[in-house]
Length: 240
Image 1 (cartoon, one colour):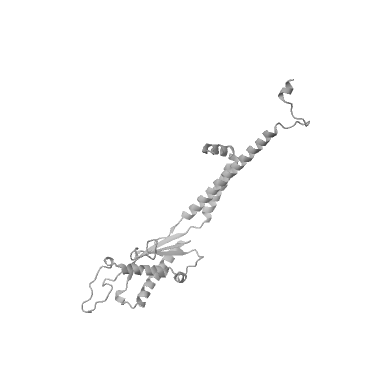
Image 2: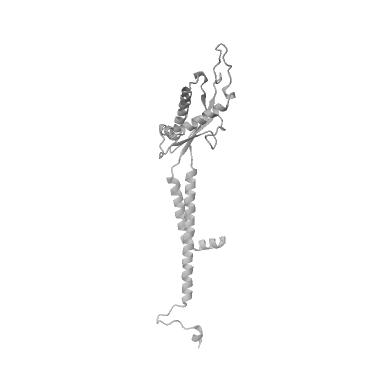
C-alpha cells in the first residue's frame, strides 16, 4: 500500500487513530519521566618525571640538572599509566572504592583509547564517574583519583625506587561539574512513541480489514429477506 493510501485509511478511521496516538504520546511522556537521569563527572591525570630526572646522580657533589617535567616524557610514564589503569580496574579495587555491581554508581578508567592495555595513550589517566546524583558522580571520581595516587606511590615503594625519583601525578582536569545525561531518557521515550505509533497503525488497519471483509460478506449474500420471509422481488418481475 502506498503512502497516500495509508493516509486515507488513517483519516477515514480517525476515531481509532487519534485515541491510540494520544495513548502512545502519553506512554512516551511516562517513560521519559520515569527513567532516572544519570550524572557524569570526569577528570584527567598526567604522570610526570620529577625535575631532577628519574635517576640519582652517582656523584652527590654533581647533582642532575633540573628539567621541566612537562618537557620530559618517555615510554616509562605510559607504562606506569597503563599499570595504574589495570590495577584500579580490578574487582578488588572496585569493591575497595565502594562500588557495587548492582549499584547506581560506576566508573571507568582508561588511557583515552579503546584498549586500556595499550600504551599509545601517553602518560594520561582518564577517569569517568557516573551516578544517579551529582554528588555521587563527583565523589567517585575524587575517590578514584586518590586511589590512583595511593597505588602509584605504593608500587614505587615496592620497587625500592628512591623517593627523589618518584613519578608525580598532576591533575590536568580536576573533577568536573557533573552533567546530566538525558540521551537514555530520550531514546527510551522515542522507542515508546514509535512502538505506540506502530500499534496505532496496526489497530487502524485491523479495523479497516474487518469492516471491508464484513461488507464483502454482506454483498455476497445479496439483499436481506423482508419481514414476511420472502426476498424482495427482482426488478424485472415487478415490472410485469
